[in-house]
Length: 153
Image 1 (cartoon, one colour):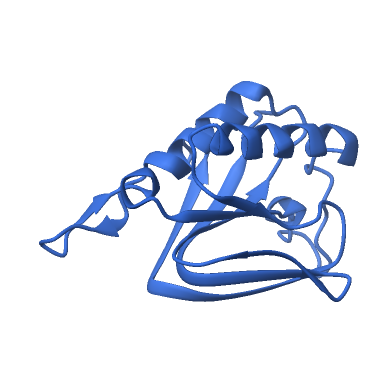
Image 2: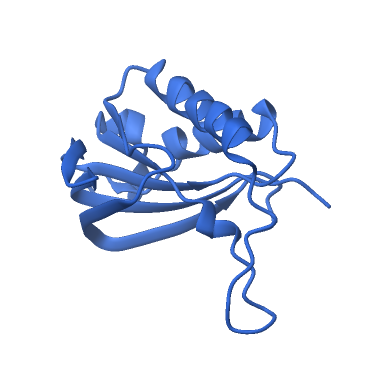
């Protein structure tokens, strides 16, 4: 089984995350990163994903070309843990989540991604790990991309 961390990246005008009925994170213009951690993922996978999130050139420059990164625009970042990115629904009607990392290890790698992004000096907000959350955002563009630490897509 090959290990590969996944993320769904959405460019946003704003995002707000509620956990257990309370706002736990809120950002303005920037990116929302839904982060899925697979069994066996490593800190190397976490660094790859955080580097991609920070440096993807998906914001418009003065010529309306997607040529600027989150770092270039000094945008904000919302990172939300999303174990369902490893939901396997190929068989039957109920997804299996056996490829998702166990909570203790997933939490450690999730926090590693968060720290790696904060070190770069941008505002990073998060959801609350392993809780029921409601994520509201205005997707800008819309621009939505899939990232995979083994470059499968």
